[in-house]
Length: 254
Image (tube, rainbow, N blue to C red; front, side, top):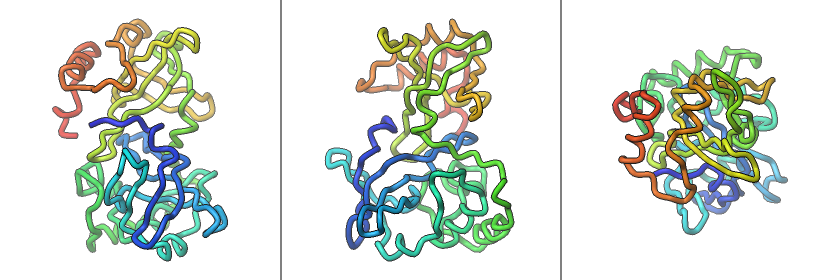
């Protein structure tokens, strides 16, 4: 099942002993392309502070009730490492966060979530060694975390010119993987949306507010049209990857 990342904004976060706040943004990582953190505004109980919540702690997403249940307590959240969500997040800060919550590092293995295909695994001694070592990274380490809200609206630049702008991301619910980027090639008055896989992305350039894609303008414009709200089935996905002449993610072991 795929969900639009924009749909998660505004969802309430419910800890084991009360509500934490609501989702204002999501941080995605642009190397393995997965949602790594929810940015949560805590409200009055924590003076409106924004905190990070990892999918590792998510027990259930209630889509109909717009609520995410997490295996945390409000006290854990209150005492979590202080991270300014309005500034780039360093690997050092991530390591401290993972050590605090006893989460295995997603960068500590070959799977999407380190040693696991899905979030929710338990940290072992090897994981702790990785995170302890990564605490030595400085604040100027080149982070690959991207704010979903900020990147939406970036221009999408093909190998032969700009083709439109990035409208959203489609996430696979089971493992929080970003499977598709949604690009609007038709402009505001004549919306025409198509999808492309993250493997086609060469680079996200913050300074230029662009997403550079290794595909031609015509190839992207003529991809199978995407209609938001419609079910994406395997037949549609196969047609999409055939159009781009690239292997689908399920054949890459991801």
